[in-house]
Length: 53
Image (cartoon, rainbow, N blue to C red; front, side, top):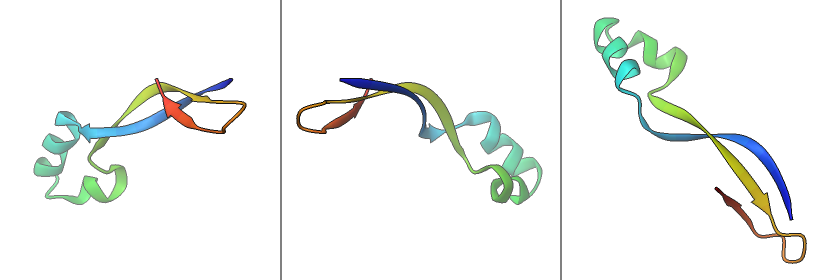
């Protein structure tokens, strides 16, 4: 089994949504609304199945 650190997009960040309202939506073009979460990605050495922990 191999593991690696990855960043996953999850849900909508409240701070980014507030910034989008304040800037009239311009900040959404630059940053997006999703928040990034650190996770560990594991891959099975036999069957090559990949999952996030």
